[in-house]
Length: 92
Image 1 (tube, rainbow, N blue to C red):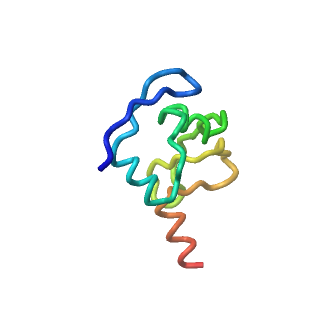
Image 2 (image 1 turned 120 degrees about the horizontal axis):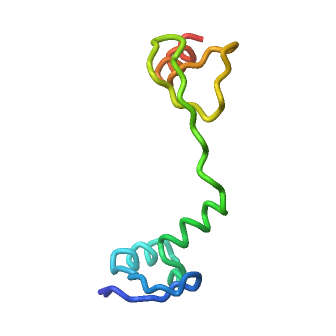
């Protein structure tokens, strides 16, 4: 029923394919307009120019494993890996 279409991105001007599967998805959702941007430009627009968050390595105060955290760890405060932090929250 649907056939792949080649469209032009209104941001970067590159061609991109609007696949038959995507067209079917759009129709199921009730969307009437075709996409105007390629996947890369849509993703960039969604992020709104936000930069990726800088992550820092730390040593987990509970298990001693490596923890990646979005803040610069200080020696005065303990840092926990995701698993140990989740366990601590469950225990209350």
